[in-house]
Length: 257
Image (cartoon, rainbow, N blue to C red):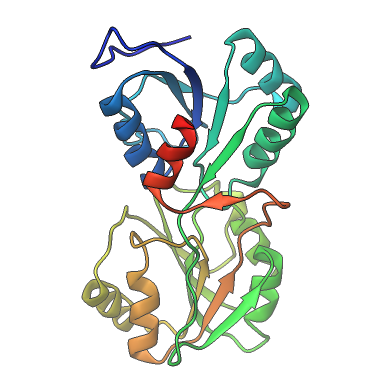
């Protein structure tokens, strides 16, 4: 296993941690684990982004090979604790982590940002997935701000009557795009005023967003509220009964217990 130099070399290592990363929460947790010392930890990134933000822990990049591959990794590296701090919509790795941890009797800690909740002035249509979001746009052609990342863009080919503005970190395959779709690359955080200016400039009539939670991309929701625009909000996949922690101190306390 990859290792980092601990602050207190005399402290006995009692935890061998696999941190499934890919979020700002994971970066904060990695920094906290590294700073406190006493842990033997490695972070893991899926590798879907070519230039991910660096982590304070040694980092592996790439998949494990499904549930069985993850089980083999956990056993070979003698992992004692798995922390899932992946994106709320990274359903496959979260499911694999749950199944592999359960099969080996390992504790699984899920650390995630809290989902957004609509306010009194919000106009949301809450849907289960990208396909439902495309249908929720309706038959009448509209100017759509599509802010779901590159995964699932192909679902909106089923609603070709709309004119899309797609914001991504890295562009999707051209074959995945709806017929009328302007693509531009940008990485958050974004400000409310900038989002308002963008939506006005592009004459946006409706926003499609994943309910990713957190502050990093919430400005688009604030902007839609300020402009009186409807939002089609895609809910994250269910965690299948796994408890979710939203507080960094709570995660560290559970690790130390």
